[in-house]
Length: 289
Image 1: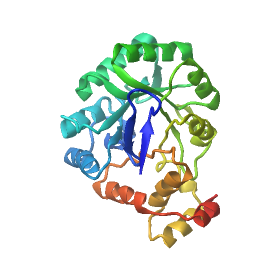
Image 2 (image 1 turned 90 degrees about the vertical axis):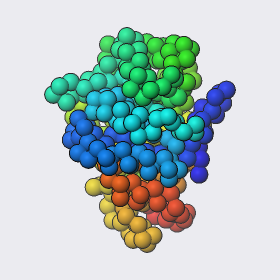
Image 3 (image 1 turned 180 degrees about the horizontal axis):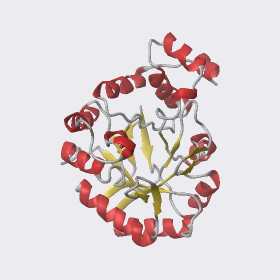
Image 4 (image 1 turned 135 degrees about the vertical axis):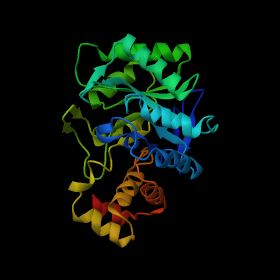
């Protein structure tokens, strides 16, 4: 199964429909070095050797921890590997998440990502929105598109966006991808300590209309505790875990969904990758709802 990013542009990117998100490779609270650094490096190598060619990261994971791990484990990168990063946020010493989204901030973040990932151009960058603030979306995206014209960014995506924000973004320029929280049990807006996270269900139809891949994040962290008995029943039917069924449900929900389940366990990585082999029937999907 593959999916094409920015299919209508001169430089489309085709990747496997099961990627890997690196956020869980950091220490507690997405801060600091991993508890088991050798295993973190092995997870990245195993993911790529197993066919994963889409990796999601951000320089504010750690901070800079996941980018440095990616470069150490995988550079020089395979020609078909797409590394997607995010800008628009930063972390304070108290581990809080705050906007970092002025044009100057965004440029500093892109330059930092280029340095830590050891790249001359980043193939895909998500602008993560941090709620309504003093910097208008048009100004933030304008800075991103300017860096795209300069060649620092190949494709621009949006993360954590409402339907209205995505509609605005589509009027301002070419949006390659959208990354929102989405899982079987968590489909709409969720309130978190650092603000609201819009759900994937709110933008999925727009993504499908425009041929924009939707990349779910936190699909295993927040979704499963509230999944209910139906997911467990279908998981048992397929001799799979609920986490695997959640990934399979996303893959079957729409051909425009590109899951990026993350983990800090090599065993769990291998389990997650097996989810792509699960075939859910139309009856399974109807039962799950």
